Image (cartoon, rainbow, N blue to C red):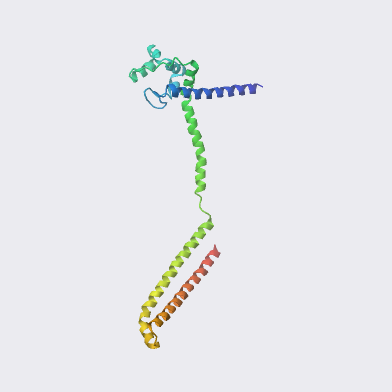
Length: 227
């Protein structure tokens, strides 16, 4: 029974704290944000450390009526007044004490809440990094093998074309000197000689290319079996 009672008290305290902070933030944005930033100077001084350095009571009194605090001779209040060209902050004594307490709660908890937000973001970061690592994994070995085979086949095709062109050039070079001989020897006209010559070239090229491709296929099959 005692444990349940303590749990209810803690839960109620947490809810009250959350509500006070949220309400204090709203009140700060409404009444204070035009002249104050939490982490840098604006019209007035930054406020993220004021409660930690000066305490809650001093902060509440300063918000409620800074002029009265200055007139009382408070050292820190006078220092701020002097630093900011002796421009006293407007009094917020029209706000109820509960609203002033909520603003003070917001100022006191600002750095803690900010740190919690940063920590939550950093905690979530590893899962993002993990996703990136998974997406950057190497492709499967068979994909790499297929790419390599395709590349080799492409190179072989280029090599076969080169052989064919070389053969054609050699045949053309040597064939030119035989055209007249064939025409005279066999009593053939030019068209017949050209046809015979073309058929001869096709046969020679096909023989050489087929021989090279067969040899390459045998070597490639042997290497793939060895894998």
